[in-house]
Amino acid sequence: MTLASFQRALTDLTASPALCRAVRVDPDIALDQYHLTQKEAMRLAGIAGSKGMEANCMLYRANRLAPVALNCPALCDALGDDLNRLISAYWDAEPNTNVHFLAETDRFCCFLSRRSDLPEGVAPVLEREHALVVARLAASRAMARRSAFGD
Image (cartoon, rainbow, N blue to C red):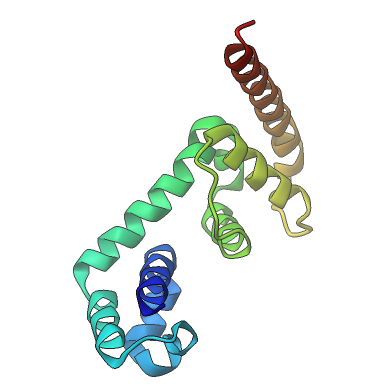
């Protein structure tokens, strides 16, 4: 069972720069929830402190940002400096990603639509771009059904 715990901890570290920082400060407390051997905890503490992990975190975040940036560029522009705060809050609330770019973008738009702290003027941009994403997602799903059933 420790291999699964080690792997879960490693993926959590990759997805969370905050967890990496916590492990750097106090690995015993930060890694306590994973039920690791001492050797595994020491390895993860070393990984968390490495420059390579910083690159992994950046790549992970870039891969999660790409669907939103590609499908909702006007929304990203409208959010401006608030984009980092809001997308980080989304990633914290939704740690599991969806590899379908339109589905992931739809999830982010739904997350934003439930927020009361959007910057002024963002709501109409969000509504417009979310409607486009929903339409493209529906078309994508319809095409997949037709292809799957030979229509």
